[in-house]
Length: 126
Image 1 (cartoon, one colour):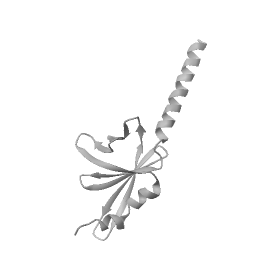
Image 2: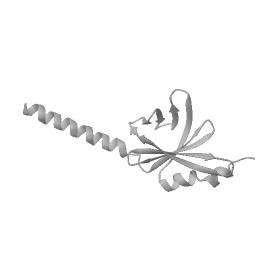
Image 3: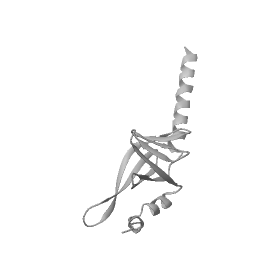
């Protein structure tokens, strides 16, 4: 009976350690993705992913922030909700039809520089 208890404790401990390592390994990094022409940012913090989208009305363009939930990683991909991002190619896929490509930003500061409303508007051709 003691063997079972020790084995169970060791197994639980390993699962906790592995999940802790994977859940925080990309914290404070961001991805800015082009998804069918729309610029969408994902910032990873404390094991969660925050989505940033440009959204505007008639008067001005703003950034909408939304907590998407927890993320997970493995050696090949980042997962959150129905979204998968390939870590090697940075290709974005949600469900089977939404596709895009991302760029990585290794700090929150660089991420927010890229997700700036003025910079976004300056990219307009007309």
